[in-house]
Length: 252
Length: 252
DNA sequence: AAGTTTGAGATGTATAGACAATTACAGTTA
DNA sequence: TAACTGTAATTGTCTATACATCTCAAACTT
Image (cartoon, rainbow over all chains, first blue to last red; front, side, top):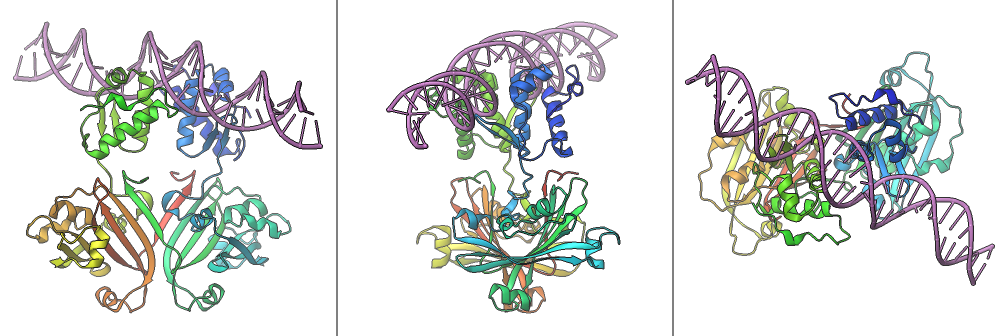
């Protein structure tokens, strides 16, 4: 991994740490630095640009606080996986807390197949007639043998790869996109609504038809903001709630 | 403003900057340092605790990033005003976007009265038999003459003040607490759930009974984490949705 | 073969000092 | 009086250095 030296101007009015921050940020966004990859060590960077290690640390601190990298004492600094898992309101992964509680939970693959694109799907993905096929997944999330949510996912079919059950360990839409397509999931838009469930959803989740549910529609974008994945998830209204804390006492 | 020196232990395994951070945070929470007030200068703090100015800056940087203080070059560092309006997911004010769109919207006071505390209410506010009375509000929010949400609010009755219609310009729970009680709203806990509306709620909102709705329960706390307000709001499921953007491209 | 120790390399904390940039204010000048 | 000027105070940036702490792997011991 090479960071180019000529892009830092020590005589500029723009602080050096900020220039370095922007430089590394750019590399990550371009994909020159991929998630999981390590940055050069602080020592290396300070030598390459002939700046103090403290200044390098200041730049890295900004990246850490932006959530783009994480540092591990004794190991190094690494590019973070874009946090589609959210801090904001735990919307990203409704199931995060359940998993953290150590409950016996699992994802089950109900169906996975290649489908022909229809007009609606092509519009959603902003693609023309040339994209004929999509991948289609149906999964169920359950904890303690109780089905809690049901999700339908679509992504563009661009790699002919068998769909392995084992991959369902990360059945998230970004995970599936990374595994089964050539696209890089980079950002997400999520819309949360309330709804009453359909007959089909009620049957799958084992609840009464027309029960209230959370409905989360998610669109995943690649670095060029092209939509590369779409999903619709239904969460049992009697099993999920979202809690948020505001103000200065957040952590207590 | 005095920060006490004996509370920093330079030989502790806990970093000095963190001890200082906690110390100042505590002062702000206690109200020893009030919003708008200035902190001692970095130089003063470094002298008082006999630590380096860079270490002081590190502590202050944490406070800045936590949003508790803000620094102005050439002037000083000041305690920030707590923000109960949230950025996280616009949950704080479901109606914020509607208001920003410039729609013709208003809050209507349906009812405001003093009520006797029952057991449930006393438990919710963690008060004993001595607190006999509470304030009770019922309000409706509407836009373009359509009723969109309905909210019930409770707060401790501690000031005998007439309830003025004009005050309903800020009918938020923190606003009502600040106006009608001696308490200072400092933080909030919100729980979002889905539900089907009751007959009463359906009648008020002009929707069918058992329609799906967002249900937001909010508890407001004072600086001592004592609950000083509670509300329950119902939002029409067919009129509200929450959108969030995640990932690194958020700003683009 | 399995466990232990050691050391190199990485990030974390802390210091002391220099200079830059901004603000506020007092003093000077037109 | 009004505008300008300079100076002190304050935060912002940057350096160079020292040592602490953690990780990993190689070397060593049992």
